[in-house]
Amino acid sequence: MPSRVDRWRAERALRLVAFASLMAWIANAARPALARVDVATDSSLNEALPRWTRAANVDSVHAQLDTVPDAAGIAWLGALARGGVGMSWSGPGIPAMALEAFPSAEPAGGVTVLAGAPAASVRVVSDALGPLDTLVGGPTSAVRFASLEGGVTFTSGIQPARVGVAPRGATRRVLVTGAAGWEAKFVVAALEEAGWMVDARVFISPDHDVTQGALAALDTARYSAVVLLDSAGAERARGVERFVRDGGGVVLAGDAGLSPRVASLMSWRVLKRELAPLGTLAGDTSWRGLSRLPLQPTSPARPVVLERRGGRATLVARRHHGGRVVALAYDQTWRWRMAGGDSSRVEHRAWWSRVVAGVAFRSVASSDVTTGAAPLASLYAALGPPSPSVRALPLFLSPSALSNALGVLLFAALLAEWWLRRARGAR
Image 1: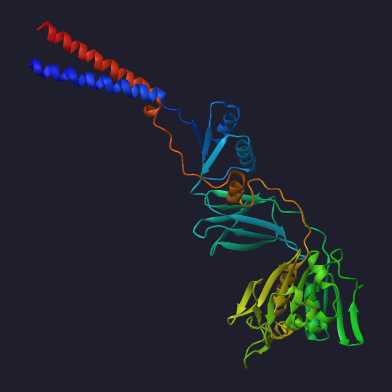
Image 2 (image 1 turned 60 degrees about the vertical axis):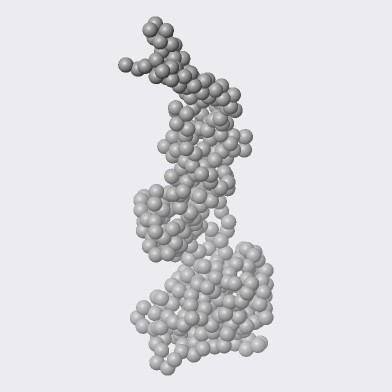
């Protein structure tokens, strides 16, 4: 049985517990009120948005996201942030991705889809009818489709991006100009076979030339692109720089880049002509003929190198104000067409058509965007950078619950001390 001294010690301990509980209760009551943070996840965000809009007792809100909300959700979150609600978000698993889809300028039609996302993720391109292709390889991909139904959806993991495809504009003509020869003849033939409407101006001598079509001044109202096959064509062309500024496209083939008239369009140098080694086949795509003039990008405005052969750039491109400029190192592609093999004619035609389509003028049209062409970038633009995930305060540590617990502890300590004092006095 406890002795009298033991009971006295227990009374003293209970008195200290009661005093500590009283001090903690007073401190808890006096401390500033904690900010009330309402946290929502992907599954509860649609329900939380109206509540956050109406609530007056929420100091700040936090969205813990696995995927980016649609455009309406992003706009709603942005409106809350601009309205004074403390807004934060976190989404460490959301991939950085981008999507663009535009109708091909080629007469045969089609749609080009440009997509970028982490290479490690499962990446799928779909339209309104279902999946179309799975992308493999590097983080960026370019895919051409003959036709699409509705908009384009690009999924990386579980995150989708969606864009609409602008309606295709009216097909404009292409102007081909250069010295008379096999190259001019078969470039015009290839483009016409691909469905392009071609105007041509071929120079026979300084005072004589042959024209095809009703030649007019270079203007994007009539022409979508101009092909300068050589320096002779570049010297005779007028208004090329203005045409590109207005959104038109220019193809500089062979030694066309040596002309001072197109110097303002270039951010590369045309190097000395190289001849194919003896025995090279005309169908060898390293040469696309039997000679080429390699291109050397210059700084600071370095172009995009689209193709290299033997360590040398053979196909480069750049933007110039509203238009595009492409330079080709090849100046004898007619040999590829004529002596390259059974499929060389088809390959020559398709290659030239793609080159011209890559620079052709495109009218600007709005697209129907639902979740955004770049979802994560849209979220950054609306809400700023992410914040660390907010961890909800355990219920037993909330101010009211802690106050109740301390009160119960204080009462229990006092009651126990009273009982011990009574028991000690009765003895």
